[in-house]
Length: 352
Image 1 (tube, rainbow, N blue to C red):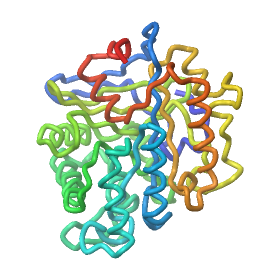
Image 2 (image 1 turned 60 degrees about the horizontal axis):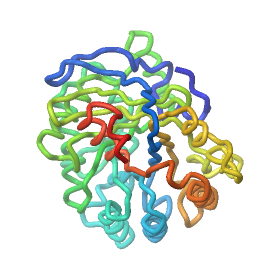
Image 3 (image 1 turned 60 degrees about the vertical axis):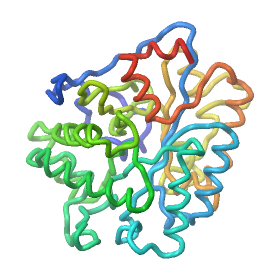
Image 4 (image 1 turned 135 degrees about the vertical axis):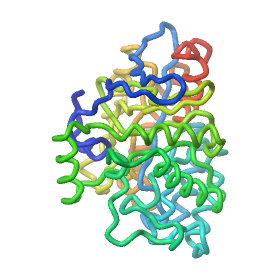
């Protein structure tokens, strides 16, 4: 799979993802790469997710402004909540800013925004007993690819994060891979690739499925964000058991809202949709009959307080409303996987 954006390497395992590798998980014993089906006469789904969301990047007021805007415009998406990025679990004895942020996260769903884990710290593994990141710990993103980790180990760690969310009034829908380009991770990823390990440990998918069956996530399906491709983005079922499923929902559009660098040179609303509504990645996907257009962003660039991409984001939303109203429908990522799983494919689009 070709990746058209250099910045996308942060959102995927280094090298070519083994998205077509079959791994037996759950009752279905299959991992399915669902093709980019193109049903006729359907609306295209629009959605997005925002990573690195934290009160330390921008205060709770910025997240409130973001949520109010999404609610007013009727748009749907998702934002992460990294509960341990502040050095401790902000669900336990939060300071004023952390408490205010958690209050906003708790109301995000009613504003159209789901909440996903970026695991607990976006850095090293967290010690839930000590309420801090383990000293010298393996980074979480790399840990997801380590082949020796068991289902039980993954499930215990994920359950810890979900428990911290419950403590803080946060219900998670799924999670995104917390990428890292540090020297130690880069070196280990290269070793894993050389040993034939080019994808996340399949035990991880089974652990997520087990937790979904226990009702630990908000819905019956768990959307995850690992792979990404503008030209080949699709949905992959990683584990399933009856009404429950775990999916890798691939973004098929990138971040042109300043990325994690909050870089004005990386801002381009025309990438999504031009002022005349005739071109841009959203328009191209719509014209090609793609079921959805899902893009990702980073809170550093997107936040309304000091993000260089916020004006571009609102511009894109306004252009979509002006030119594509009636041809697209906004959904949270978890709504996409819920409806896809229930329908057994994209057939539900004929009824939206």
